[in-house]
Image 1: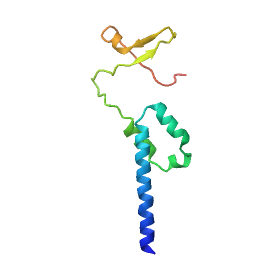
Image 2: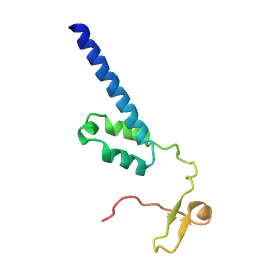
Image 3: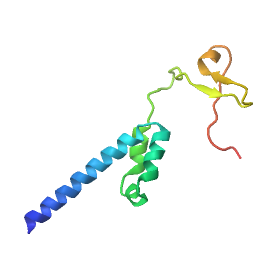
Image 4: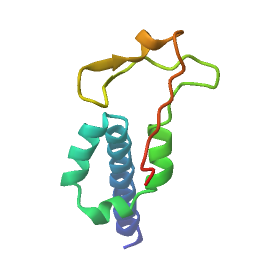
Length: 102
């Protein structure tokens, strides 16, 4: 009886570790791909993971203070074209604001 309980426990632990690996791999994908993954994941499974520390580790960037910002392109606020960071480098300061300010 103890042997079966140990085997079942190890099997559950192995499944959980694989699940955590799949979750971590999904977190390292683009936000759009991760949202598609989360749409099909039953919500109770998400609560069975250490989500915040995994998310922080998976989404941690590689830019350090003093490094140049990676190049990116954004749509202009007036929707009249796009702006590329590298085009502004050295000509004027660039400030990015994320989140709500209301």
